[in-house]
Image (cartoon, one colour):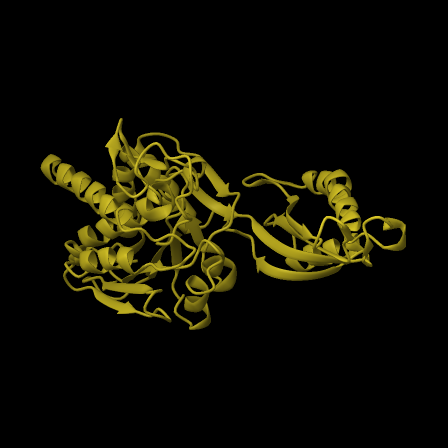
Length: 387
């Protein structure tokens, strides 16, 4: 790529990300049409690409874009990313949907998590379309809705419909362009505590459900959390548990007969999900009734896998130095590809987790520009003629 071509590509990816940021897609409420229109319009100008909308409602479009290499059959490589964001929230000093560029950063909700990654692999896809004679096989790009609350109307539907198939997956979640080859899993549980109501002036006649829940919350913090913190994984850190919400009582002068709290348990790739759910149930030990609202698997792709090795080589070449290999401490749609479909999966994106969900969210423009080269060169490495 010449200097002028590189300069044009830099302006292209920044401009595309600005357009994506300026097309709000907060979830809730969950309406990605404006942002998906930007994606669809961009992909519509890519020669030879096949675009399909497989969303379940008009408000929740989901695009699958397929590009075939010109050098014959070969591997199928998947790129994936979600177009929904959390709501803008308060505390901004800049327009959350303005796409402002200042001091080498592009600002706006979704810039880091993860419209920047989507912009990067879309521009790389256009460049790869212009070089189809150099690679074989197939590239499939998934741009999905609904990741923020768990992916039920996005990547999970792709998995259930059999559309997540291929030889490797690259998910463009925030990693600072480090190669993440692992991700924590998560269990979200609801625990309901029962009591007996009574007048607030005679609490001894009742059984306070809030008190039961409060004692349980302290027990989680004092006994279970320290136990889990002893379990460590080299890429994603410690196992953890926390109480997220608590709700109980109807009036100040009524002893509450019910209290409900929710628990967030983060699971390591080295832990078993069934054992984690059983462990939590045993800890509750009949004090409350537990239901598991969400179970997301952890994953780890081996360091010696050809996908990881190729990604490390490419990122080091593009960035000009040793880039760390790590893991995602949060959760993402990558689990549907790795644990769900059994596809070797990595996470590489220009955003960073410290910018996810915060006021004045932004992405480093140098990392954004570099992501295009990383995605392009990784695809060429994996799909080069003869692969």
